[in-house]
Image (cartoon, rainbow, N blue to C red; front, side):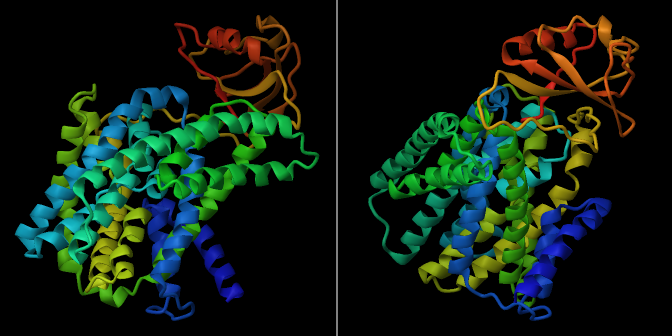
Length: 488
C-alpha cells in the first residue's frame, strides 16, 4: 500500500506539467488519477469510506485555509472583505434557493432533494480557488474577493446542508435557533481567529526555540488550535482558521520566512492528497449514469444561480460589470462540495450515493470548464495584470531572534529610473544594502560601480524603519513600482 501511495504521489507531482500544457487545473488531474487507481479503475487502492474521507479532508482544508489567510495582504482584505462576506452569506442562500428551485422545475426532483443539492454545491472551494490563483496574474481586488469568499462561505453552506437534511429526516429544530446558531458560527469564528492570530506572533517571538524545526511544529499547533477551539465552542472552525492565518501572516515575528515556505509546501501537499483521496472515493461507472442530470445541474449553477448570487450580493459595492462577470465565472466548485455530498449518506438519507455522484459530476464540470478558461476570461475582460518575472534563485533571511531588518525583492522594469544607474549613485536609506542582483538567471555580486540593467531583480536588506523611505524612492510617479517582501 505504501508503495502504491508513493507512486500515486509521484505521478500526481509530474502530471502537473501535463496539466499546465493542456491548460487544465491540477485538481482535475489529481481526481482522475485517484479514480484510475481506485476500486472502480485499476482496483489498486480500495477506498469507500465517506466518513473517514470527511475527517481527513477537514484536516487538509484546515492547512489550506490557514496558508491562504497567511498570504492574504491586509490591504486587499480591507477592500474585498465586505463584498466577499456578502457573497459568502447572502450569496450562498441565493445560490442554494435559486439553483434548487430550477433543479426541481427542470429535472423533476422533489423540492427538498433539489434544494439539498443546491445547498451542497452553493459554496465555492478554497482549495480549488487558492491552488488555481497561486500562479495567476488576475487583478488583485477581484482575485482577493474570490479567495476571501471561498475561505468564508463554508459555514453557511454547511449549516444550510445540515438544516435541509434535518428537515428531510424530520428532526429540524426551531428556526429561531437556526438563525441564532448562524450568528454564533460567524461572530465567534471571527473572534477566535482574531484572538489566536493576534497572540501567536508574540508566542513566536518569546519562544526562543533552539531548533528552527520546532517553529514549524509551533505554527501547525496554532493552525489546528484555531480550528479545534472553534469546534469545541460549536462555532465555525474554517472561518477561524482563515482569520487566524491572516493576522499571523500580516505580523512580523521570528522565523517567519521559513514558516512561509513551510506552509506553502504543506498546503500544496494537502491540495494534492485531498483531490487524490476524493478521486479514490469515487466510482466512475456510477457517476457516468448521472451525466445528463449532472450537466443540467452544472449549467444551471454556472449560468443562472451563480450570476444571480453575484449581482445581488455585490449590489452595494463598487465593482464594474467586467469584474462582476469574472466573479460569476470564478466561482469554482471543488473539495468542499464533494465533502458536503457525503453528509446525506452519513446521515442515513435514502439515495445518499445519488447526491454524491451528482455533486461530484458538477464539480468536475466546474473545475474543467471554469478552471481551464479562467485566464481566457480574465484576458477578455481586461483583468489580467502584468506578471512579474520570477527568478530561479531565492535568497532567504531566516532568524531565530527578532530583527530590525527585512529582505525585499524588487524587479527593475525598462522604464524605471534605476536603469543604467550605478549602485554608488543610489540615495539608499542608511543601513540599507543591495546584497545580490539576479540578471538573466545568474547572480551578480553587487559593487559600487555595478550598473543596474532592465529586468534585473534586486535583493535588498533594509531596516523596518527605512522600508517606507525605500519604497517611496523606488515608487516614483514616473514608474509607480512597488517592492514586495519575499516573506509573502
